Image (cartoon, rainbow, N blue to C red):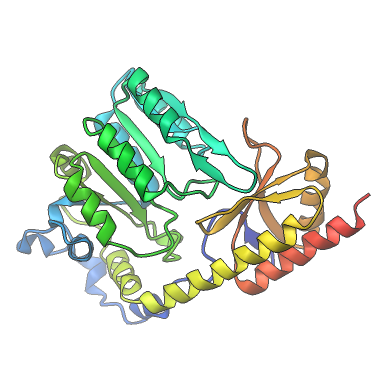
Length: 345
C-alpha cells in the first residue's frame, strides 16, 4: 500500500468498525483460538448464526455463514446450478456475476437495467419476459446493485418474486446500508425459494474479517447441508461480528454521514462539465465522464494520492466508481476533481 494513499476504489468502509469490535480483540478469550465451538450442544451451528436467526426471527437452520457474500454466492451456484443451466444476472453488474456460472458449466442470461439521466432502474417487465423465455435455474437480484448503485423497489421485488415462485431467487444485499430485518422476514416467510445474502464487509466495515451470511426460505435444506461446517466457524470472527451487531448507533451515524456526502457529490460534480453522477443507495457512486478526460484525470488524482475506480468494462468504460470515504476524504476528492476541471485544457 502506497504511503498516505487514500483508497476510494474497492467499496470498503474507511470509517472502520465500531469500537466494540476492537474491544473484542483487546480482551479476547485465548481459548477461542484453541478449541472448536461447543455451540452444537445447543443444536445450532454457531453463536453468530444463532444471533442472526434471532434478529430475523427465523429458525437457526435457515441461516448459512460464509467467507463473505462472495463465498455464499459461489456456494449457492455450485449447489444448485448444473451444466447448461441458466443464471439470470443484471446487465450492469459486478464482474464476478458474469464468471460464476462458468465455474460449473452454466450459462449467463443478462436482463436489462434502464439507464436514466441520473439514476438506473430495474426493468421488471423485461426481466419477467426474459424469465419466461429462458427458464433460468437461478436469478440474481442485486439491491443496491454494484456498480450502478440503484435498488429494486419493494413493490417491484414482490412482482418478481410472485412471478418466479418456482425458481431460486438470490437477493444480494451486500450493499444495504441499514439493518432492517422485518421486511426480510416477511419475504422469507412468503417466498420459500428466496435467499437473501448479506455481508459484514460494507456496512459493518469488516471486509478484512471476511464474514457473510445468507437467510433462506423454507426449501433450502440442500443448501444448508452444502454450507455446513461441522467443526464450526472462526470463533474470534463471530465475536467481532456480534460486537458489530450490538453497535447500531455507531453504524447509523456512519450511514448518515455517507448520505450527506452523496448529496455533496451530486451537487458539486453534476455542476461540472463532463461529469454525470448517478443516484446511489450504496456506499459508492457511479459517475459517467467524457472519455477524453479519463487518462488525465486518473493521473491527476494519483499524483494527489487519491485512488478511485476507473471502470473498464464493455458497458461501463467511461465511468468512475467512487467509494465513499470519510467526510474529510470525500471533500479532498471533490476539491481535487473541481481543481482538475478548472485547469484541464
